[in-house]
Amino acid sequence: MTEHERLAAGLLFRPGDPELKAIKRRAHALSAEYSATLEDETERRAEILRQLLGALGPGGFLQGPVFFHYGVHTFIGRSFFANYDLTVQDDAVVTIGDNVNFGPGVTIVTPFHPLLPDERLALRSPSGEPGRYCWAKPVTIGSNVWFGANVTVCGGVTVGDGCVVGAGSVVVRDLPPMCVAVGNPCRVLRPITGADSVANLPELLGGCRPLDD
Image (cartoon, rainbow, N blue to C red; front, side, top):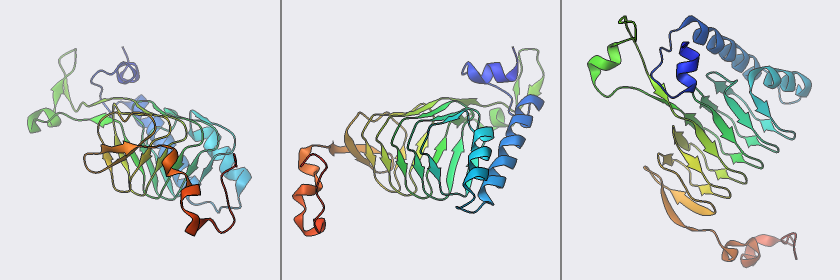
């Protein structure tokens, strides 16, 4: 079993494996190239993202700068928006649904490391050779999700459709659909209901109204 196969299976893997390092170097270079582009360089940006990501649906916009660790392990749906300083450490697969909005400074991290210091320094491979090992768990973010600024999502987490996650939250557990969640660690504050409609905030509307009015 290759180290990439071990990674995909959720097993301990060696991140210094040459095959994995080559994928990461490519992703880091493409991330840097994208981050150096201007917003109106739309064709160049689209081509870089095509090479960098596993998938990106139509209507996506990434403000930049961005950083993807593997890139090819990230799959994003349609009409995605990410404000500046998006970081995705996608050792494991990261799946993002449709109509998702990220504030500035969002970070998604999938890897885990041993808690014991000696084990962080080295573990033995199946063949008995010592080396540095970690493991990773996938992240799934549903559709119509909004993250405030500086949200961090850790490996193994699923965020349900329609969630709003408050600024600065650290998400370490699954979040159910249609809730407001905040804090470190992030906890569900309350469900989102019809009472949250902007129609109930007349002082803000200035002539605007919900589409179904």
